[in-house]
Image (spheres, rainbow, N blue to C red):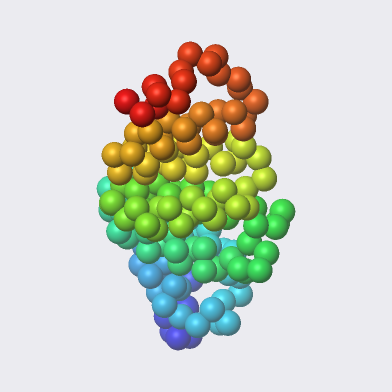
Length: 173
């Protein structure tokens, strides 16, 4: 493990210096495979995983991105990953998992991430991605009535009052 750590750290450092993506992917692979207790800074690895996951998404390598995102979340202390100290990073990880899992039709995984964000995000703005993809999941399942009622509920949470141009029968059609 120590050798993998040294290789990973050297590749990460050099990859960042010269902007060489293959070095960063290889560094993330090595560092994710070692015992976490050997790492000096797990947050550094979390950020490397986030960066390389975004690179993977940009290259449409979604399965790789999902692995990197999950490895990044594993670097965050579970008991306080939604604390102020880790909040933004945690939210970014989960929002990307929501989108990426949805993109590869892993709807259960996307739904689990949506629930994590809905339960822990502090503002409606922070829940935007979760709200959007929760409606997409319901729409994708063909339950348009539920999608409409869920969307109305979300809109009302934002304090927007919709005109009552629909009655319950309109949602049944």
